[in-house]
Image 1 (cartoon, rainbow, N blue to C red):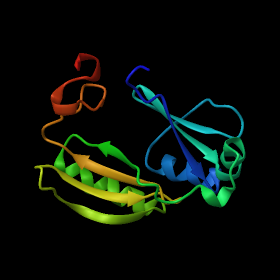
Image 2: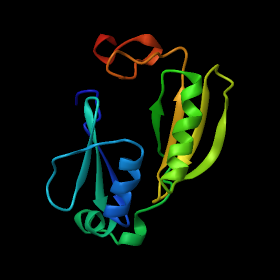
Image 3: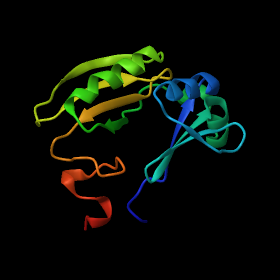
Image 4: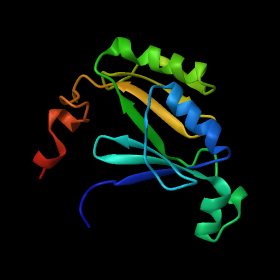
Length: 148
């Protein structure tokens, strides 16, 4: 198995409202099949899928899928001062800020919000992992393909 994540799928209660939330953050949709909303990420895709449909696909009940699952999606920014505006944009779009922007023990600066379905996002500035020219995250300043 190659070391990558191709698609992140979030189960959502109202696909129209969820798509509007991410669009309010400035994200643009890419063409996708009916019933799915997709946003191109650098090298992968974030997909929104109706909770009922995803549950059926997995052979589960919709109430078994949802909320905080122990996974945090992270969005890194170029500058420390960029963290707060993203948190505010999430709040304005209907999300909930669950941790205010603050300095972190490891030397960065971050805050957290939950989208309208409770999926948790970290917004972070990591001075040790600057973003690449296309905005790609580079762990410790190294691009993924350069990592052994």
